[in-house]
Length: 353
Image (cartoon, one colour):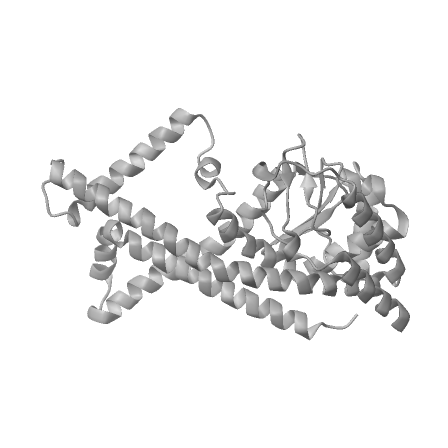
């Protein structure tokens, strides 16, 4: 099939800038939390055989590098789990879906790649997408897709998603989706990190506040427990939260621009690679036409409860509708090229082959 050097450059550039943004987020969080981390910083500095500027650099490296690695890993794992949950998708076995499993494994072998995990979404809307983590990926198809397509057309769509996995753009787009979703309030991190009853969450939250309150004794110049100390703590915590929120929005803006640019190009690249893999560009053209017409007759839903989540991951921009009519996994249309343009490019591949 050949390597798409233009796609690879876009992926590497996007990934590099994403890591820079993530590093900026981690560094900002560490800086804002420095007042509360002062005891740990002093302990690390005391244990080092050198002091001064070298100790400060060592402290920041000791914090930033592990934190960045955990932050990237956590984003990928969390986004994968959150996305599968929002589209009501579950991992399936070969015994449950033998035909689907056989198709995916056959196409993966043809592409010389490890077959991804397969999940099926409980949705009548025909669509698909792939999410990637470090060293693994999950290919998601809806019940509606399996009911609408079969034969070569289904193979063409599955090959398209496998190309996203093989090209690694599924992983980059999964990573790129986290900060925008967090900024938009689509991710309930605290609820997901603290499962259980509301009372238990309040207890954990209260303990965290009490811990920060005690640690702030090193910063607030007032007796612990006094009114002045409490007011100083509240002001310090408020500044940390507000400033952190503002900076998070600033850091998110370039991520949105990067992900949209990559998302549009990667669809063309996956279409072309899938057409070459299956040797049947016409099958993918027919699949696009069929699914696009299905999306056109789908009734509009109340998008106040829309979950935009992983931008640009779906095969078509319509997204998934799950459960009630107002519960939709939505992908912004601007992140996808027009279906007509994709079909035109595929027909040029067909004529050249």
